[in-house]
Length: 456
Image 1 (cartoon, rainbow, N blue to C red):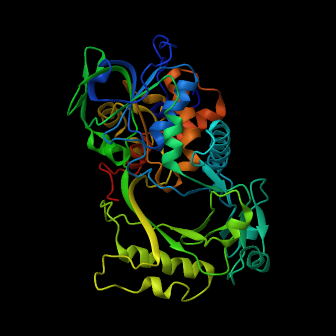
Image 2: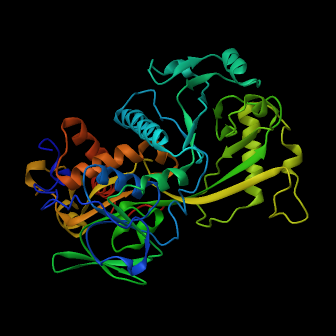
Image 3: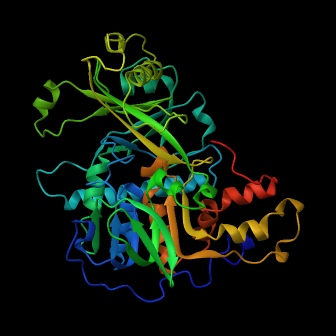
């Protein structure tokens, strides 16, 4: 990263000091102290971020230990069983847009590989459904191989609903059972998955990281924080500017006509496919829709709420330009916190996101050093007068994936794995490291002479 400013330069030797054992793990799912406490590389968090990184590193020959407080993977914000995967491409086609498009393709490749190895009779990892992104002026968007422009009339024909606009149609979009995905990722023979470990602090002791938990304490030379909103609970992690956002999905018996593609307006309506291979049975079965999702920055409560179901259903009606489709389902019962019987199920999770909706990925900065040496960037002094950045040795972060986690998790995992292994692959990766750098918000505040993070 020779062209990067000093505050974004990576350590000269940021990779593994010595190769980690390539011997397969003999224990892929344990609890508390069933395995040795000395580890080479530990990932805290078994949501999508942690599982994607663990699988990426294991596939490159590294032994990895994953710790999680729950009894199984994807038990918190990654618990969505029908999360839509599509890229988020902008009119400008900027670096963030290209990052999302590349990430979508990487995730899709991983899904196809895992599905091919999935055992017969097991729950599918994903279903291809296609997705229509509603836009009033889709002609502003350039041509792109991942989508095609759709007029209002074509959009109505495609969906069977009187949509108010056309948009961009992504034929390869799909919805993913994220818990199933995470479970498959952790089945790699070089991954130890240890459940029921609530990590409460991390300390640097004798050139190792000591991971302090409610049960066993672990020592590791390298640690990755990938536990979503829990990252902010560790010392100094507030500088990452991670923000909790609550989201609730609603699953409901669909009205007629049935949808054949997902529709993405202010909310997303996903037609869920039956797992039956009998086409006649598929036609007879009632279709279910999942409507995603509320976006509440004011709550970190993951319990479901009927009011959010109503908000989802109302937004779905607006997206489909079809009033009163869910009139019965929106009625408030005598107990307003209880959904009516027309609603099949609902789910809520609290995701970690960032102000620019891009993840934080990389070697964790020494924030004390940053405050000491980069506090006066607003003066506009030449970059050459500033020292190169310093980082916490062997400590990394992968977080802030937010609601777009599926489209960026695996490309972010690949970039971070390259940093951990000391194998970044060129100028494109260098640009992405800067785009996703964990200190970018601190640097922006310093350039604007803001000393503390702004409230989310």
